[in-house]
Image 1: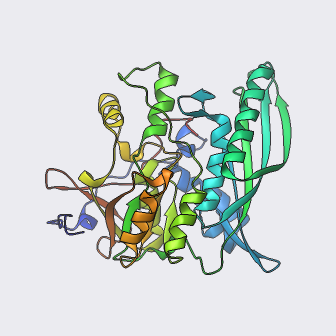
Image 2 (image 1 turned 120 degrees about the vertical axis):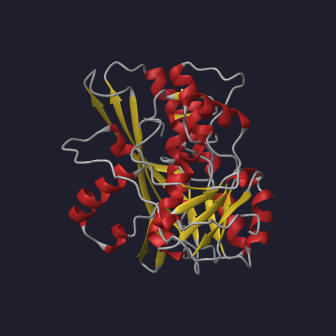
Length: 356
């Protein structure tokens, strides 16, 4: 990681006034995967349920049950519009939960699917979503084994909402969680970032950027299996969905009490995404992905893991983007292309609402 410039000052000494966040009601930012989401979980939900399993705050809970190690996850999908270049609500509802399970190293097996339908939505739309879910489940190697349906009055929904839960088996010897990040770990991202968020936004807002940008939605369990075949000692995996890569890295840094240093020039941002974000004043690091993962890998295995990722279709664009460091614990910084250093903070809310 010698290409990363050493910061001339300690970013941990940088401070700025914190915004007031005394919110008496729920706002859209509470669902954005940033600081407001974290506060909602830490101040409302975690105290209400109070248990060590939930307190780990991982993408999926790892449970010991009947002699087996199970990963268990649930997620709700409220994307608008329902269909976009590269996918739709049905793909997200399967791939999102499959990927949350995979981020614990699990092999996903079964899903449940609960639909909330708004009165007046066309049955053809519901069927299109359901068929897309079925195709995505088959591609991911999972079975939609149970489900539920509710209907709400017209004006009290947004067409179709879907909640999926999933279970999978965690192999013996695998212990993947954000608390295991260690100084010296190599940070690898599996491919270009920002595609999903920009694809959804382009359709929602009717924007054209000269080239169609398609979502990266895809199941990642096979990619994770290929990585674990190299070494079961992968420390951290995370799929950077809401809040993007920036939010995910901040969560890992804070959970592990380590710092993360990135190289801006090494982060794979497609030209179309960079141009769209530049035009709209967005930071690609905070734009959602639905078919990417970020991994913290021991340096002794990093080159071999990277090669295995690049040999897999879902990791062909994998790149080393930084390293885990002892300096500035709990913070993420990036060495810019101009030779400076900037802090990548946890976003307050969300740049793009309703994208997953």
